[in-house]
Length: 147
Image (cartoon, rainbow, N blue to C red):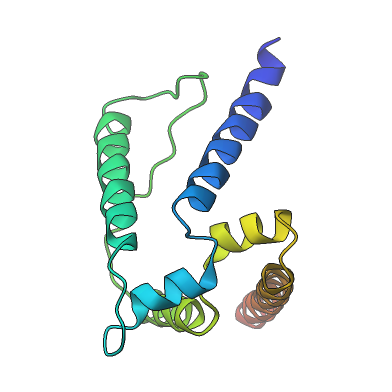
């Protein structure tokens, strides 16, 4: 029974997250692009979603930092690095540009894919291709460092 607890909780969390993204219109690229259009007809409605997500995240990290094990008994694995690197800044910039161009970030794109939206499928395909290219570049770099 315990072996099913982790996958079941992950499924439940994913479903809850996906429903939240759909209800908040975060899976609608037009709504997201309206929020990001500060110079045009700015739509501030998604700010409430962001503030809510940040509040939940801050609370979750506050609680998690005080625990050594998760509710399901797994060891807590929290990020420890606080260093801002060029790689972090460039990755954040690429993420932001992609979000601004497509109106999707990874979570909402997966929800859109699951809902059958063609734009979601295109974004997820491009995202997976980018992940593969990244992995190949990282492997090549680590191979060069060992040589």
